[in-house]
Image 1 (tube, rainbow, N blue to C red):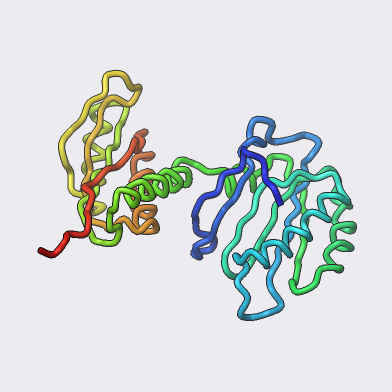
Image 2 (spheres, rainbow, N blue to C red):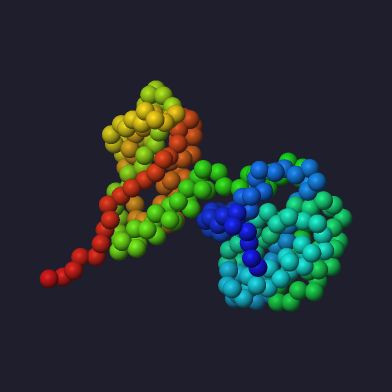
Length: 249
């Protein structure tokens, strides 16, 4: 199943379980749609207890189901959440009675158990709050890209090292309050920074020890972004030393 270029994939947790989120970013500018004001979901799990729902074969089976559902009703596919146990598709449609047509489609599926539901959602809360990435979610994409780049430069990724995170606020008092809260949250406070070309000119460098294992970095950047938001601040990036394998002489 081909997805438009406007789709974004990122890692996040759902109910405390790691999952992969996929979302159509192109829908954002027209959301919420007055005509497509009903949320539908199709949840797929395998009939086999050992099957991995992230496998290519299971993905293809589930996508064939959702293709049929989209054909029988006037719907827009908004996003997908998946992990090893389930695949869940989210769509927006025009008529809640289309649920009957969708239920007819999924009865013909083999090898998967499907569950469907629908509810009026004129404000597109599921798309806006669950699927569409906020700053913390989007940072996980940047983290993956940066870690992949460092891996190409032969970084070992898994050894612990000092990460430096650069956070900027609108005023110096806000920066000072943020620094104190960051210190209480376990971060070491580094040097103050200043960017006179930004609307958030007052910055500080935080330090923390971590591996470059992506879930570890994602957890750290999420904490920092959530903390900075309390003080109208933002994380602008992070860096660290590259750790390469040393050759034995």
